Image (cartoon, rainbow, N blue to C red; front, side):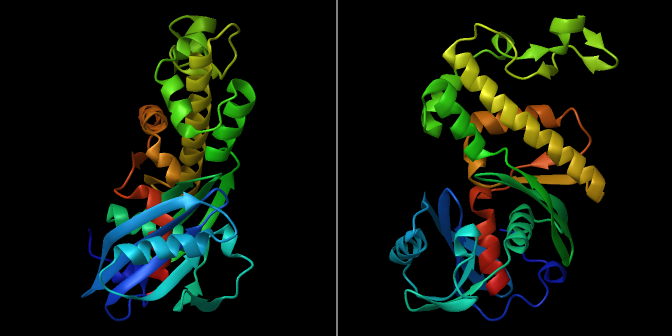
Amino acid sequence: MSKVDNERVGDSMRGDGITLGLDWGGTTTSAVAMDRNDGTMKFLEGVTIPSTGDSVSEATQKILDSLTSPAHVVGLTGIGATSMPKSGYLLSIPYRKVDEATATGLGGCLLAGVGEALVVSIGTGTSFVSVRKKHIERFGGTGVGGGCLLGLAKRLLDVDNVSDIDLLAARGDLHQVDLSVGDLAGDSYGGLMGDLTAANLAKQGAKKEDIALGLMNLVAETIVVMSVFASRACGLERVLLTGNVTLIKKLVGLMMERSTLFGPTFLVPPHAEYATAIGAAIGVS
């Protein structure tokens, strides 16, 4: 784990001990335990469960059960926490809310060991957070993310979980479902390579497996292109992919493959699925 750059985090780190971070999202709730020691944040444990009205307490209890030392404070973020007071107690542990964009930026950059980046959080939807040392702001977002993938798969394939989509996509062929530049114009057109997508899901007669892969490619390409536009607008050369969707290896593989066509460097840091929860722990410490 990289040492925290105090210029990035400012005065957020005070004292040592175990701090919990919780990201109460629209689809899932993630909780992490972080050990602060001599200015360094070390990842200890993480859990993710489906979001419910009580998922933040359930996730906290799961983390506490895995620890041998008590936690002294909780950083709480995510859309599920919007109705909660700014501070209070969660299972007898004091908590404070942390702005979600701040948590995403802090967590992503800590995990990657960098001071500046566009941090892309891919969960139910996708958000873009610009990080420049002490300045962190939400740059924008899109509704295309994990929720979009699941919704389309349910309607088109009658599949409603990521594992089944992944299994189907592993046997799919993009050439059978996506219309490429080469299909329309031969090897290339106007400087565009022939294997680039001209229209997602545009071919008729595709098999279920092909459609599953086409849905993944639609989500992957949309997020990559929007990330490139956002990074250029922010003047940032590094894009960090974070969030629960980074656990879908086939989708991440498509994203990384597409990203090589553009200028910015795309990275998936370790523990990327917990980046926002980790940032909540940093922001409250």
